Length: 115
Length: 113
Image (tube, rainbow over all chains, first blue to last red; front, top):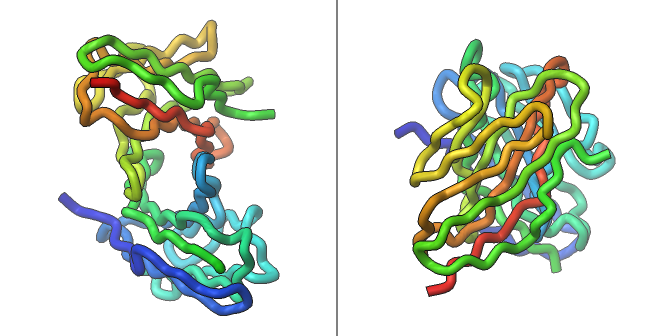
């Protein structure tokens, strides 16, 4: 079964350092999402890509977060500088076009701990 | 205002007993509804979805949910739970015209042997 790949699974960093997460969606999926899930809460959308274009980044803290999907395939989410409040699980998801557009498949996530 | 409300943050249930996890949504337009399950330190896995058609939806692992438009609810049920069902369960909604998947705060299901 096709999966969404994410790395690293776990990342521990000190505040003010830079950190990056990588996501490879299911092959052929046009839409890619990055969600942040703080412990004890539901995931919240940070950014949504349609192919290589950003369609929603209204909840992305743009002063420190950036995301790109240059060739419309894999994606990188970067945080610089990291703050204590950024400790969370970062989830990547993808979805297909057409009737599959509303069904998201999630990766295993990248858990970030900022010390 | 919350789009999705999961009133129960934790639900303990004895093994082989039935369970219902409650989900209510708020929307003036039509919606798509989903239940996802998250096992410890893992991503989210789709349990079931309501897009259209029959209001009773069957999913994986013996779970089912019923879309009730008049009560704006989409409660998740299982007639007999197992230890392996211990996980966090998230209800989520997509509103027509918004196309953004919004999650509830989750319900932690604990199975008591």
